[in-house]
Image 1 (cartoon, helix red, strand yellow):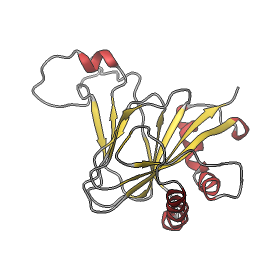
Image 2 (cartoon, one colour; image 1 turned 30 degrees about the vertical axis):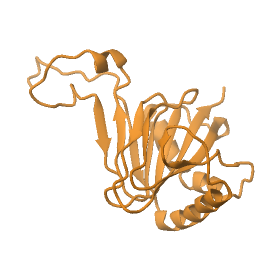
Image 3 (cartoon, one colour; image 1 turned 180 degrees about the horizontal axis):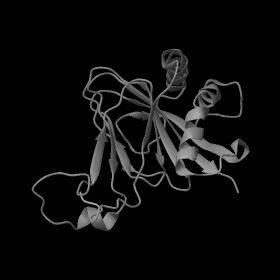
Length: 202
């Protein structure tokens, strides 16, 4: 592309992907915590999950709990997201409004949804066996998703969905308004995810 011609890509939709440090140790604690919750409440709640188990929101009142220890462990990644956005990072004003777990067995998946009334959302992969299903993001521009011309090749400019391959220890952080889903688990093992939302207090 010459200097007289420019392609200006405006208003990108980011998904920040990290592989967290010491994820195996973190996951051992999280797996124990999540399956203990499942034993106490096997029904869970119905959200975006199709035939999977979705926990109730974690109790975050105990600062030394497993979820809070995990949240502290990933705080540098949250700070990095704020820095990349150019947002002011003030830990005293960043609030985790909710955190929960999802267990998807073979054939389970999560339909497209958003997380309203938050700035950021996240998905952390505690257990992600091979062929357990990718994270899928969709174009939040509804008009562009419903009305578009025929194309003869797929490009980043005409794509309305993106599939992100994930593995154990991956942390995805993205704008809460971004429509997203989780593909069907086609493996023989459980897929275990922790999700949470972040608000910024005024």
